[in-house]
Structures are given as structure tokens and as C-alpha cells.
Image 1 (cartoon, rainbow, N blue to C red):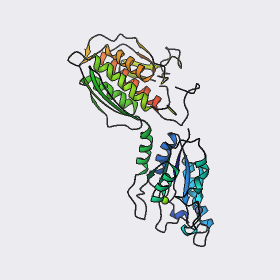
Image 2: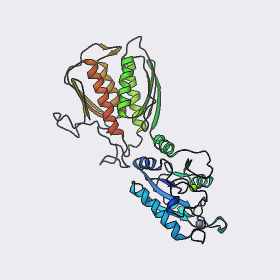
Image 3: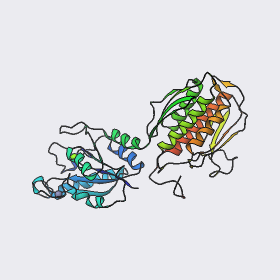
Image 4: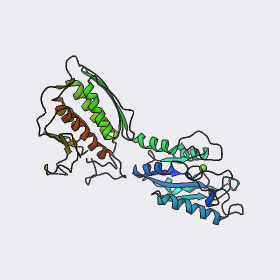
Length: 378
Ligand SMILES: [Mg+2]
Ligand SMILES: [Zn+2]
């Protein structure tokens, strides 16, 4: 479903001048951060509609030509950076004219309201004034207030463009899962649209270090807390963490719209690790074309060319490496092929976790709004 950002102009895209009237190019200043934020939101699949009140437009105090010149300048400036509006809707009336198109009245957006094909749940109204927030409410969508640090008129509390982009994007791809069995108590939180804030506490130092590789190289934020039956051994802790992490990633992906889906390979010192999918790359000799596939069809092939030795790396039993990836792939619905060459065991495992993270980074990345499948489902 299509999702929209309905965006106010003055005080939101461009800073509001003291006289609240942009009637010359000299008065045009972009609100800080607006371009990177809108590009991020465009990548997340949003379409933009501008909705603006321009009091008394076309009267002697605000001639149409003056408005048009600066308005076109703003639109061209934004378009040159990749930001275009599906529609630009403007009310030219003064409040006392009592028209039905002045925000927060719904006249301007009536055509959108009659159209049921877009997603109200995920669409927003963004503006700097109470009337913008009210407009969102009247339209039945969420509204966010922007705070323009550049403005020459006093500002209400609000968010920066970066915060708005983060909030909208991350809202859709955050998942927390808590799971308790007799053997383990696990809490995993992922935010696919944010990096940092990582924390790992599984009771197994090397495993914490490996999970950090997935998050850091995967380019997402991950917190893992596990209380497992380490007095028995590390088996349940590692296996169950794989399962819960797989579930959390799967749920955070939602409908998987726009994701890259496939992913890659990585050398580490003497070791080479590859993660690939047979459906995309049937030739395992060709090691540079690599991917995992968020296919919805769990399938895991671990082809460790160099034998992973038996034994331990710190508190981490080496043979749990394959078990971890199997558990996660199954829980996440991942087609996963992994390959690693001979070498130092710590390096082999670390290279596999890093390569997995890198593969995930590509596969999780949002590029547009399409479902990357010819079948229409993943
Ligand atoms: Mg405004
Ligand atoms: Zn109007």
C-alpha cells in the first residue's frame, strides 16, 4: 500500500520569515536537515504531498508573481536533490474568508480522503503549527510537529527533521521478543533502522563478541540479554539465542517491502567466509557473488571447507557455530549457505559472523517500496 507524508511548507520545508510571507528568493532558507531526512523517508517508500496555507495570496500585499517565483525556486531546489511532490496543494485564502480549503479544514485533501488505496496507519502529516497537528487528526492520520531552529518566529517544542525521519522509519522496523523456557530466559531487541546502542550479555564472552559482529556489520541496533543454564553447558544458551534473534529479525522486517533480500562474502586474514544462496548463485566456485536470501523458506547449508576444529573458543563450543546459524535461519525463514576456508578457529568463526552481518546489511536495507519477489510474497 502507498504511504504518504503530507507536509506543510513554511516553517517545515523552508524557514518562516518574520513577516510569515515568502515573496522573494532572498527569503528562502531550507529548514536544517530537511533534505537528508526526506531522502531517507523516500527510500523508506514514502510519497510526498505539500499542503500549505498562503494567506491572502494574489492580493496586493502578496502578489501571485512574487509567490510563484519563490515557490518554483523552492520546488526546483528540492527536486534537484531528489525530492519531488506528488501534488502541491495550496489554500490562497485569508482566515476571515472562511473557505473550506484552509488547513485544518479538509478541502485541499478531499481527493486523498476519498481514495482508500493508501495506508492511513503509516502515513503522517508533518508541520510546525497546531493547525498542522489538527489537520493530521482531521485526516485520520498521525501528525508530527517540526521545530525549525532557523525560524525567526518563536517555535513550539517539536522534533528536528532527523528525529522525524528516525521516528517514522524506526517505528516500522523495531521488534522486542522475550522468551522463557526451563533452560533459558532471553530478551532480544532489534531496531533495523538505527545503529549503535548495542549490548550483549549472554554469559559467554566470545558469543557476545560474535553477536556484536552481526549487529555492527549488519548495520542495525541489537540488544541481547540471556540467562541460560550455563551450569549444564553453553548449548541451550547459544541455540535459543539463535532462535529468538531469528524471530525478532523476521518480525522486525514486517512485510519485507523494499528490502534488498540478498547478500555476500568476506576474507579475514587467512580465512575466507562466504554466505550465499544457491537460487541466485548456483556456482559455488564463484566466490565473489554471494547472498543469503530472506526467502521465507528456511534452508541452511554450512559448507566449512576447512574443518572447524572441535573444542572451545573461550566458553564457546566451536560446534555450536553451525547449530546457532541453523536455529536462526529456521526461525527467520532464511535460505542460508555459508562457507569458510581453513585456518585459525577463532578467525573462522568470527569471519562467519562478520560475513553473516554484512550479508544481512544488504538484505535488510530498504530501497523503495517494492516487494522483492515475483511471487508476490516472501
Ligand atoms: Mg507552517
Ligand atoms: Zn482556502
